[in-house]
Image 1 (spheres, rainbow, N blue to C red):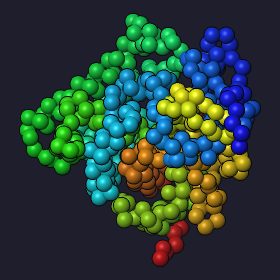
Image 2 (cartoon, rainbow, N blue to C red):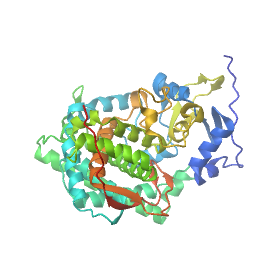
Image 3 (cartoon, rainbow, N blue to C red):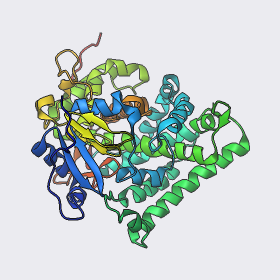
Image 4 (cartoon, rainbow, N blue to C red):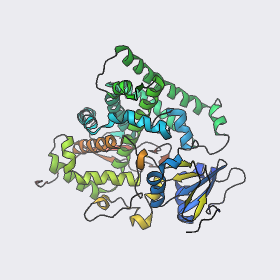
Length: 455
């Protein structure tokens, strides 16, 4: 195919700021609208950068799976926010540094180690359920945040402190809710202004940093491997080199932030979707009650709960944990008939690609059956990437998959969360896709349904 140096067409922007205000005002609507208007790709004018949004599965494969070494994380928008908050962890580093870090932390996510957390996940969930009462209203987003933080603290640090989970939850909310996506040259200046949102964000970040560094100091002083992830990181070596406190801090902070944020949002959106689709809820409940018969789930049960897996997959399609990611080209590249210069920033959006009608048929419908390997849709590689893809695929994906399944299975056997009538459910695109106003739900006692023997 003949290559052209002309960039693809894109939405018209304003002088100086380009498409920045449109993107900032409503990024979810802007991205989907841009795809609907321009098709495969679109040139955007953001922060004086050459930015191109790519929407097709083959584009996702090109950047994430086929040519990952030519692309790094761009230090703008979400990338700049993550770097400022997380430091040099797995989510923010590139090249050989990233590959070395991945080798060092990989043992923490070995299948056997991850599966060893299953009992803690179920136990903590059961303890939470003992505090719930049918007929009461809860903020499911807040409740799931505290639960998943408690789980991650136990898994990473061997700490069981519900009070600490609440404190850290407030700190993470102060950081995330007061971090704005900025595609302008004024972004760095604005972060330094004495604004209330900046003070809240920085205070939250200090609370988290102080907590992590205190644990590192304590672990180093005691000098014992207590079997948690922090002990493993302190002992990890790559070619004889161990991690500094700063390196350990950045990895641990990345695990805590990404680990609980992904899970809490997945659970909130999944319970919301189930409350809006009673036929799906009934089918899932029948599977859970048939297989589990009221007992708590174990890791061994998950293979016998295929519909539960489809429900979670479909929840991630509708409300992906990460809704947008970027890559910056180290060298010029040719794609789809265009020649893109070095430093081009590619935007890839799960929010858009997970909803392409020609791929999904009825993307507006929450339909777990599309994941049936026998009669479901054949999804091309790159059309579905809730955890990214290629060598930078989220290292915590197996943890998140297991955790969300076990927690949903545990909760639904006891309680059926129903959305409070009239409650506004609005996706808020921060670093992750959060429910803007939380997720207020009324707890109902789960009914018993007729079950059939499972072979």
